Amino acid sequence: MLSVRNLCKSFSGPREKTVLRDISFDLAASDFVAVMGESGIGKSTLLNLIAGLDRADSGQVLFEGSDLCALDDDALTLLRRRHMGFIFQAFHVLPYLTVEQNVALPLALNGTAGAKMRSRVAAVLEGVKLGDRGKSLPRELSGGEMQRVAIARALAHQPRLVFADEPTGNLDPESARDVLGLLRGCAKGEGAAVILVTHSSAAASTADRTYVLTQSGLRPA
Image (tube, rainbow, N blue to C red; front, side, top):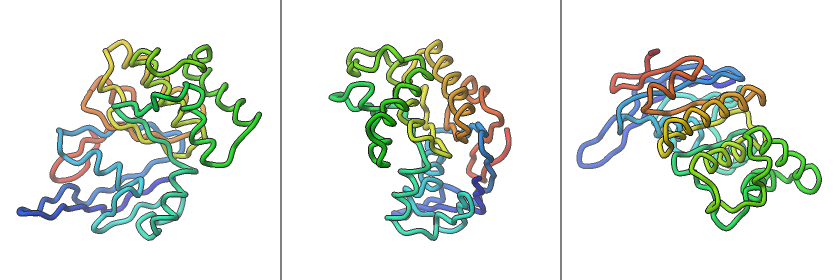
């Protein structure tokens, strides 16, 4: 489904810095992979390049046969909206919307409405064990519950690829285990591939396989 080939990225400045060097790996449907590495090594940059949020200096990102590096910004925006989901450490749950409304956002952006939208929102909230919290506002939720809302939102439109950038960084160990278990279970059930970026070896241990990002490249753990 996803093939990353010889991806390189540098940032210019007083001293040019090469962040990613010759990165290559493959991802199949329903794969759950973790990427570990030191702070500042380029893990989030790698996610941004794969998602088309930033441009590589060289290399290819092939998503279901399409080279994302060759698409213009409008095409990339449409592809992300339809086929990708994002989960972040800081949740990014909109505080003035209910849980249901937060989860419905990607569906609305893709033109889903009415009974079909309500049915899908209800199903995905049940999947993350928040079926009874749909009318709640984020301020009424725990950190673990807000991260579950973020998972539900990321999966609502049934994306092919999900990016999880330090999704347990703001959670206590018990909540982190619960969230990772739900993410893995829901993604596998939906057939989505997941790339998990994490500092935590415990979080990485939930993945099907783990890569370590270093200054010299990406290697299997």
